[in-house]
Image (cartoon, rainbow, N blue to C red; front, side, top):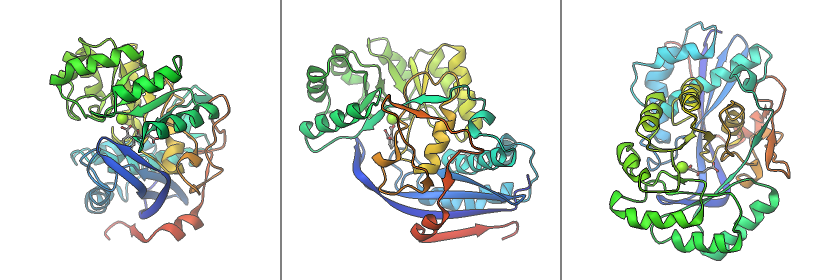
Length: 371
Ligand code: OSB
Ligand code: MG
């Protein structure tokens, strides 16, 4: 396929429910949608960077300008036979993985449509049904949190993950465990602790958690390995893993026993597959993380989750948990057994609601060679 043009769109979507982590509360998402045009086909990708550089150093504006100034010019006009060939074209631009992933993933979507094949098969997936969990943010009260957990369990979700931070952790986990002693439960600290809180973190061991996600610094692997030796609970790394080498280091230093793969954080499907393979080779299970995606990013997460080593439930859940109206059709739906049945149509299997996107998009820019 020849990459003839790239369209950027800004779409603002209000969340059905606010989402709060240790770095703050959000009420809506400012999405950057990327469309790659070539050979009469449009491929769609979503940049998962947040409106502000809190989860990672990338943010909406940095992604937009990096694509406009550097990434689009590096790839426009090139003729590719497979989506992964775009990776070396962008390799001399350092970092900006979420921006790169949006372009690369759009191209995978285009390739799947062009080959008339489901994206999940093109990626090498083997599962036809994926296992779903939910990530529940910090609430105004523990009672509110318990109510939300009740709703998600009733909907069939197979794993509950709650956000924690100092002051909203042991007390909260105690309440959850006393009400539901047997559910699969995990927590995510988004780097809210330091190594001198080891004694406090050891208290998490009493709750039989599936994992504690990213307890320490966002850029650290080594101190997580020191911490893991002192905890019974498995550590899962999210923020610290940017590529397959990070995953290899984390595995070799025993900094974690589980890895969260977010395709945006690692720079696209090609690197996500490599992280998956490194972990598989060392019997480290992985699961697919979420970034409050619209249906476009969500459908890509579903496709990725069909790879063999995605053996734990991901943060891939139903459209209606996030949006009044999603920008794909049909909505992503979860069965009463807590699974998503993978669609067999070409591409992601979901139709892009372009009219709705145009209505929601206050800003749009078409980039062509030489423009
Ligand atoms: O750490 O996994 C995280 C959302 C935004 C930024 C970071 C994270 C999250 C989530 C949400 O946990 C997962 C979802 O999309 O439901
Ligand atoms: Mg996380």
